[in-house]
Length: 485
Image (tube, rainbow, N blue to C red; front, side, top):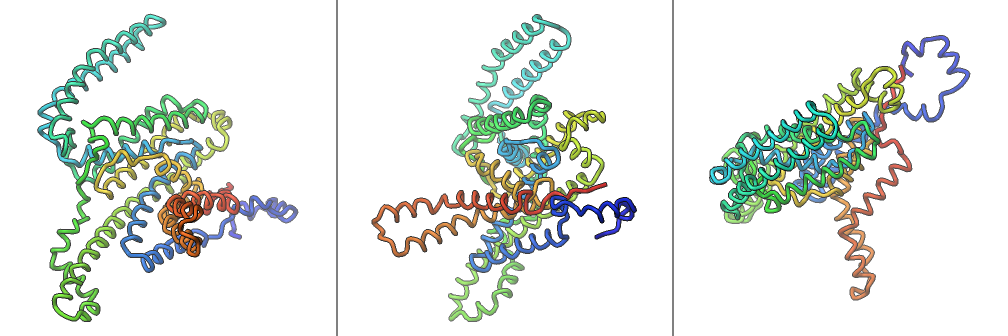
């Protein structure tokens, strides 16, 4: 046991000698090797995938695990630090993806020429409606204020509808098979990562101003509803990001090359040739050697790009992790945990509960938005139809719960572990079903039933993992460290 000021106090020593620590308190004292061993085991699992499946599969899991870990840290900031239930992770992730389009895609000048003025005029009308409403809300009182605001909103909508509708129709009519939207600013994609955080933070601020300060279930309902609204807008407003027609061909970060260009670089050809020198030397003739080298270049370029992404995502993860750890150990972090544990006591001490909740809710949502922009960058396309609550809300919550809410390293570990299980559960399910049905009649109903449940087997595995962790580690694999002053 380490020696602290509390341990050296004679009264404390006497109390501990008379009454041993309760079991619950003793369990909170974690082994310092627990986290390193957990991450070492996770690394060994990824290495095993690279050895027994393929290196590209292992690297693909690694990249999505890094992004998932960032998302989990954003949710952990809200739930683990402040106890805020965010059921709209999907919406903030999608806003990050939208930022990748708005910031990095080149502008579509034909569409802007056709409907740009109408869009600008629509923006002016919206700003005028908001400004007029805000002025009336402060200048008038009673029923007159309500009536005036109602009239302004109705008149503003009547004026806005034809202007906005004509602009949208003009934009979406410009080569709808390839574009049909306004495009973006054409800036580097890494700028979009920060913009994704800003987009998500802005929407989180609006939600927080309305729902925070009320009961926690109102916040859950508000975040879930706003997330569905965001997805609905992205799917139906083609002028913004092509809707369900998707935006493809997004730019890559500067350090990440394109595979086809990399395969033509002489230094890369020499590197692959040296790495596979023995296999190439065993080729029977020159033609066979060229075929082997061509396939090696294709596989090597794919792995090189994934490694470049992994390095970039790791840098972002470490920066956010360092900031979150610093925040957790600061007076601000101790204040947030005090508010989480006892709002009444914190309020009695003069803390503004709603303002602090709004602050941390915005910060956590911004981190989720950054992760959403990173994921769209990795995919190279923005597909609003793929955002669903199971993948982008439920799974992130499982990562935080399994890893250990309130512990930043636990959120990172949960991101890696749950995504790994999510990806590997399907092939594992198919293998189990294959072993179970190997001696069955292929025309039997049971055989067909087993084949049908092989693909969704991952859902059973996820539930099983969650139950096991909740049974044997109810506070997560890496529980929050409780500090006693």
